[in-house]
Image 1 (spheres, rainbow, N blue to C red):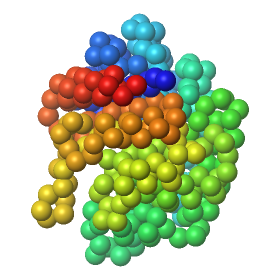
Image 2 (cartoon, rainbow, N blue to C red):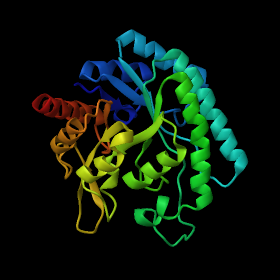
Image 3 (cartoon, helix red, strand yellow):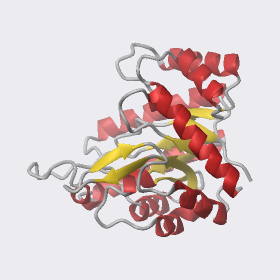
Length: 288
């Protein structure tokens, strides 16, 4: 058993070019990069963006390309917006699949904010699935039935990131959405680094047990809880999540998908990338 180690592009979103991102990822020992589906504040076409990535991948021998957010706003009550997002996603993945051997792509189905404006956005157990209407669940499932069928056709999988303030914000709610969609190519990206921000959270073992049959991807990051109830981002080896335990549980459950590490901290993220991959490779060497 072996896992591809993926670098989330947020380690290199401090002015680095796509060429530099590909070069650094290979140099630091990553198997691949999770790029965003599009870049913010960059004036480029989808084709230009994908061409630049393809050039860097071939130049430096990057093994794996994964795409992530933004996803589609299928929770938006405007049907024209939902349709536009669906068509944009279809177009992107058709073009991407011609350039890359896609295996799994991170995705999102739309954020949900409680209509009560007095509720702060960081009270996560009052937004997302907790505030979603039956219509929003239905719209999200309908949109990804179409995208799931496209993924089947193009031979890759979508994995919903378990993320606060989205309809798929906890392992059980994400599994609910995946079951509603009921397409083999649509599964789950377990980001336990997001799960720990909830008051009533499952343990690592419980979270994996909920999603394991549909676990296609994993994000890793870490943090520590503060006295006021907030959390402070840390390096992978420095927070409260025991990633040695995490990876052992993944091994016990025969997980074979990629593992992506993220940079939740500000500062010199290139240095953090080298620290984090050294730690996670050491853990993998110990347990495999």
